[in-house]
Figure (cartoon, rainbow, N blue to C red):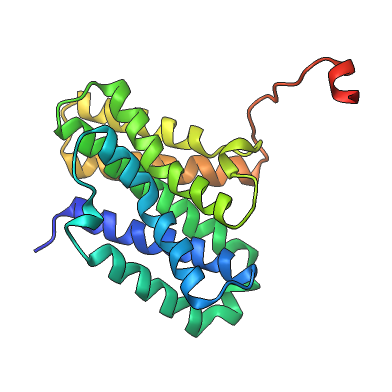
Length: 208
């Protein structure tokens, strides 16, 4: 039987793959191109995290990530006419993937004995890096570099995860609290247009 973390990882993979494939569909990619975008969206952050933690990336030892992406592609093919025209679809699936991958990254780092700040950074990389690669592939400015609260939601969720861990809560409780915090932070930030201050140069530089 899969563990709770594996279930989160699989659901996150499916959600992130759909977010990537859905955007690729909107850009009129072919099926193979859409699959590639969905796959790198799903495994990009986890691969970078595992390489930094000196662990073999999960997709190299378990084909479930390839299968999840294939199922996501099939889902978009079957329901693509509805998904592509729903602006909220990408946002919801992307937020779900962001939340689930963040807690997987934080939990894996803590399990390997790394300090909390490394765990929070690894959680943020796991959650946000795949979206950066996706946006580069489809020729969009990555969300992480825009005004929207994106990677910062991972940091907030990772911090709550760590606090729950310090309080001695069960791992699955930490994961639920951390994931819900990421998701809610992202939702509230977009709903109420909360964003970080923009770092701007002087007026002369802006006019150039």
